[in-house]
Image (cartoon, rainbow over all chains, first blue to last red; front, side):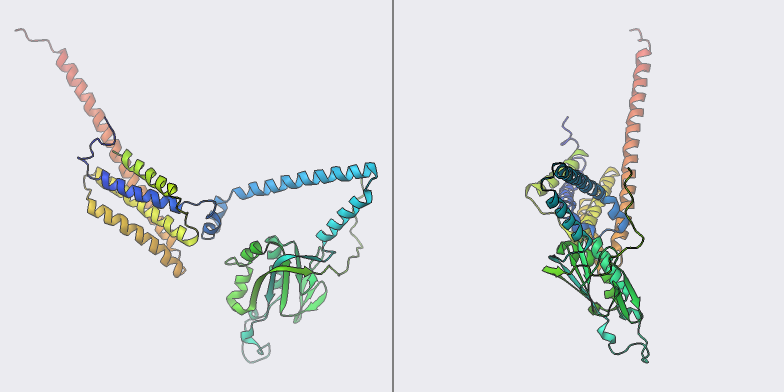
Amino acid sequence: MNPFVAKIDKQSWVVPVSCMCLVLGFMLCMAWVTQSTRTSRQNYLPADQKIRVNENVDVDAYEKMSAEVAKLQAEKTRLEKALSSHDGQSKVLNDSLQELKVFAGMTPVTGPGVVVTLRDSPKYAGTGYGSTMMISPDATIHDVDALKVCNELVAAGAEAVSVNNLRMAGNSSLRCVGNTILVNDVKISSPVVVRAIGDPVTIMGAMNMPGGVLAEIRQMDPNMVQIEAVKSQELPAFVGNTTRKFAKPPKEGK
Amino acid sequence: MILLPIVALILGAAVALAIKLPAIPGAYGQYLAVACLAGFDTICGGVRAGLEDKFRADVFITGFVSNVLIAFFLAWFGDQIYINLFLAVALVLGARIFTNLSLIRRYGLTKWQDSRTRKRLQAQNQAVVSAQPKPNP
């Protein structure tokens, strides 16, 4: 007995249902999340579901770390070889020193990135505290805003960040004092220009995330935030205090 | 008979794959996903109606088209007014799919049990008939 033709004439529902199934299969295929549509589709998911469909992120991180370990091991071998042979020893040491200095922000760096400009809301210009008009404190740029932007930039993969041409390094701080902001103990005020070096596309995407830091500020006034990608920019070296009184590297066990 | 719709479903997907239709990105992909849910619900409803002998082709086909469109535009409309109607549609359709599928399952189960009972009774009848002594001519 052929299961496809059996009873079809008796049961009128089979053919229409099959036709609509054809259409549904077509639609399902177009709605299916593929590699190319994954990113754009995820933006419409609630956060908890995003985590559920995104378990492959950890795999990526793991692979990255494994690559890092392999790289470090190769580096170690290279250094050991250089030490043992004494040939090119100083060059290897110098190379690794330069790398560390770039990482620590002790050298100027150039590269593509983004520029985020934060300024006090122009809507309320001339209506500072003391004027009769009540204005929200959200209409001005605070240290916290700059701090959050820096944090977001680093989280989005920025490799170097500067605030008003003051480089952010290991012991940098952003602090509100009166009506100015202290960056590495240097006073700045609005507009705050935050420059970051990194993949402009990734960083732009991360910064413009709905509900993100910039979106929060934009809610008050869209003119307070300006973000643009730049092909190439130079960030200065960290010029703050680098003396230490207390922190010392631990002594190697002998 | 249930095989034909399944084959058609796979055939539809195969055709879409064969002509290299691009998957829809972004919000419209989401709307289409909801529309798919609506389509699946309607097909479940159609199968159920068929099993209950209440199937009408015109009701089914217009229902399919209108449900798909309504789900799509409701999700779209929800995004325009910042209300997550997407979730509401998904919730309602999900519940309906569950109901329809459970009714289909019950129907199938009842039919299977009926046929089994019938067979057993027939076998009993046979046994009774053959056990009876043949009347002498």
